[in-house]
Length: 250
Image 1 (cartoon, rainbow, N blue to C red):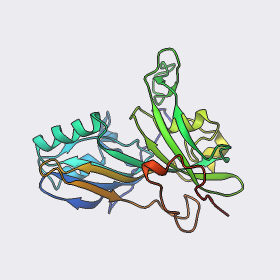
Image 2: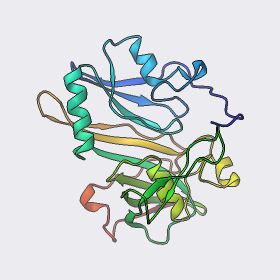
Image 3: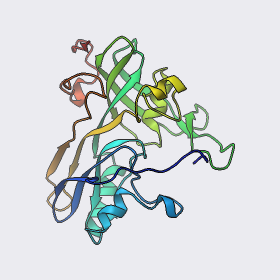
Image 4: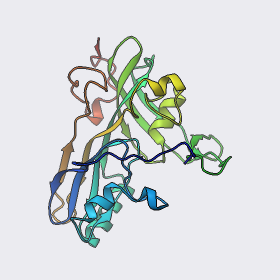
């Protein structure tokens, strides 16, 4: 992180607990709060650290970027942690994100299939960056579908197939449509267009580790930051590439 970065995490009531059983927790993370403690005393405050004051044991299953908001899952038992991580690794977990991007994509739905790699660190203290790298990058795929547009921005539904670092942010920037508020991949003007990164993990579907029951969770994005006055209905996986689906405009 750069010298200019000052960690100012939001206070209570975050994280918001949406679901709990004997094996797992589903919580809503706000933008600006770390998923787990960072390096250094000033970066200890996090979703994991706050939940650990109430739940012991507690196991981190996956992460969201500091600036990303939305659904996270934690395990409450070691066996549940192993089972949930296996679901993520084998792509049994379905994730849906919402992102408000700069500009309006010419193609309203598609698959972004561009390999990603870390950018070699040029200067100590700078935040890590990633880039499209056809030669050395790891495979990365993201389905997108435009839900709404105004004159200068669009709301996209995103379904990542893989889970690379900064995948959604780099994929959208590679299309020429960075996410508003993105302090790494957007232009200064696009950064100033939002108070924080407008990327939100809005749906999560997974198997209950013990019973195998398929669990589905929804966490709406903050309006009106993400654009429309009311959110349009989301598309199923099969509908993501439907060319005739209606796009809401304002």
